[in-house]
Amino acid sequence: MTPSTVLVVDDSELVHKLHAVALRKYEGCRLLHAYQGAEALELLGVHPDVDLVLLDVNMPVMDGLSFLRARREMGVFEEIPVVLISTEASEDDVRRGLEAGATAYLAKPFKPPELLALIDRLTGPAARHREGSQGVTGR
Image (cartoon, rainbow, N blue to C red; front, side):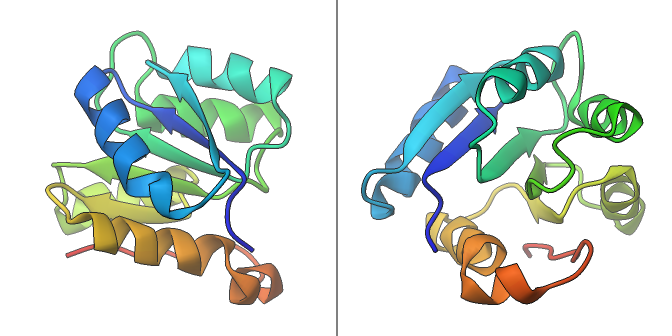
């Protein structure tokens, strides 16, 4: 299964454009855009068909970790895989991200094929048979 709807959450318009270019691989994939965590939670409420969230860590108003904690506290959208993306990629950063509820952590900078391989693992046929969160890190 390829993702049909991906929510990109980042405060950088350039990052939104870069993800859009990379995700062209998935023909017919619809992208939704949010620029901070609270906006992403609202969009998920309106678009329950989201297959995957690409989430930046550092954003104004509600950052990525706060988004993950709010999602967990609300008990909603937890079945949707979330790739946490950040330039901060120490072992502690990755651990905090996964503990907050990210499915995977991808360190910036990364190459588009790395992102696409991770998306394929999280949304492909094997992903449907997995139980619980799997921490996958880039680099």
